Image (cartoon, rainbow, N blue to C red; front, top):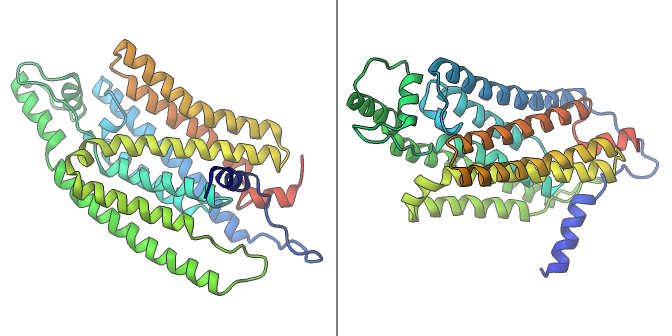
Length: 336
């Protein structure tokens, strides 16, 4: 595929209108159960995101200090909601069907990387015996560990940060990749079956999103087996960044479709602004924080990204409250 074909395919994926029923066939009434299911899944994403931020806020108040990143709260009593929330959000993002292959792929990528962010914890520097790091002291405070000597503090904090970390990464990675492999095999069978049993009015499923997903999972396997140290130390940050990028692009694409196909200009522009602002804001915070050497740069960037995503998802949930997708909203309401 040359560059022109690639640009044309991308434009089609973004701007292709929803498929209307054949001439003379009235639009079918939406299934109320399907609408309620999509509604609950979207609301659950909002609830889990708020829960994750609340868990971090509770530990900030209880410990009296702030860690350098939200990911570091994996090592505090907030671990349960941190990991469970990201896994739940990831599952919901995968469950929601995108408007087209591009948007569905973006949701699936974000949904895949969410659990990886949760289950592959970052490494923290706990300092030395004489000078425990600020992170170590804060984690000790979060676990209500008080009245200990500096040496004891280092040992306690080091144990909290490192105990079982590599073993947990091994277990979680293998289990997650096996689950994804089984899911991809089943999805491949569904695509094969759908292509052999075509139905009128139902688009022919394409193979390329499935192939891309398979290559992604194989790539993760290869990195884990062939570059184990790099995987343990770098994958957490790489998947977190990739998740934010996928959600940002999804919001931009949804905003463009809302403006061009639904003629809802204000709402569509808001989606685009939020999508651009998510990544632009994170990059600006990281650059400024890197120059100033601010301890809370990563935390601020993560809060910004999660906050912008939360605003976008709340708006989209309200927008599509009575619809399963943007396509059904376009077909039912028409231009605004």
